[in-house]
Length: 114
Image 1 (tube, rainbow, N blue to C red):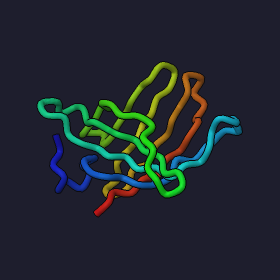
Image 2 (image 1 turned 90 degrees about the vertical axis):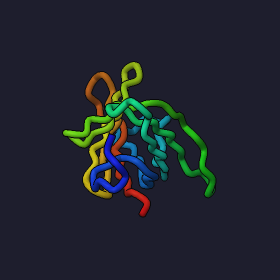
Image 3 (image 1 turned 90 degrees about the horizontal axis):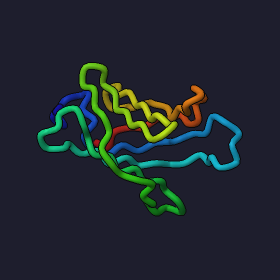
């Protein structure tokens, strides 16, 4: 697993925006915080807890293990017909939530807390 000093390490707290890319009434733009931790003995996985910020308070949307591809600098999580895919670019992370019909439902931009 990459150490936190690695410029492309996912470990730490990431904050940013999760923006809707469809007109689905169930989708709302959100401020989000991702807490990412290493999983002992599993260098190809990380634990992520995803919170959205509502009225200044963090509300956990979910948590669980995500796949970590160090060579591609990506994090991914597939749930049913949905695929989250995030790419680490130094202290910034960008990604999408894509549905099974290849519709991009959300775009995310996150920055690593220093």
